[in-house]
Length: 350
Ligand SMILES: [Fe+2]
View 1 (tube, rainbow, N blue to C red):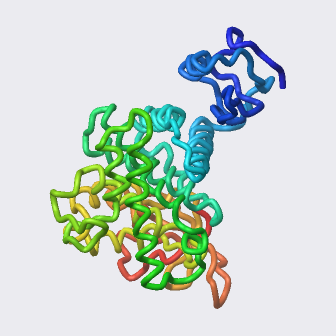
View 2: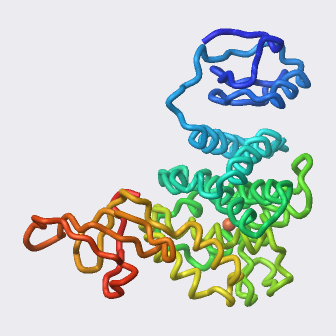
View 3: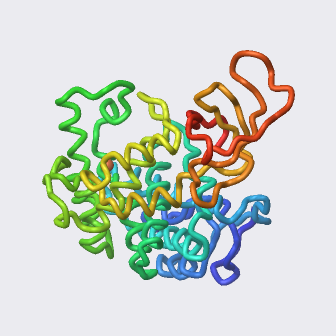
């Protein structure tokens, strides 16, 4: 670690200590990789020097750094918001723009890292994942860059209101009572009020916090809006939100495999969720990467051997073991697109 002046500070250096403003507010947390706009912001706050690492951790891949930074940024914002502070989403916006820049080049660049989360920090990981999925959807729908950036930021902030929900309700390891659920629903209203007050946030971004639980058939909350009355950002983020929530381990439930989450979304496509978006999204995200271990409904354990270009949910697999019965001495291949009786029911390492 060494101290550098703002004039010596360069893009790509990694902060070794938190940077605070004159009145003690956290501006940039330790671990951030400096970019030009950060240097401008530090100057704006009259900060003349910071501590940086001597060498950037080189074995981190770019997406992992961005993912990690986004996690820190949203955690930071949500924790400060809890104390009633008005927060400046500057860092969050900058980091989200990095996600979008990567996704614009290659849409599934983050898919291998979303979904790795611990139960305790669920809200933060979930926010980052929903932001990534939403940006992917924005690109699939042909949005221009600025619109994808706004969408991804709206997604990152969508559950902000959860910071105002009592932890006993938010982290309850069982089903909520009706009363508790009514309280939980208020995170949409709290979130809207909080996000709306942030600097430089448009109504289009803020209203996502309010409307991401609305459903096309009017069965959502809090306003019970229907169909096109629900803005496009909220319709997109609703899908990313539900998909990510289903595929995550929670304190009160186990995760389901991506195809089960897909079944759920497809069941309600056109009823609760925008059908076109569901179809586009699932085609992109629900696939089993080559090399991951899966369990079939027959009790066979297999390695994904090759993707099926026309049906990503049914790859070619190589069976190497069985849950019960005799061992598999000679591994054999099954094309799940041909063999409709077999289903993937679990993923061992994804
Ligand atoms: Fe929510």
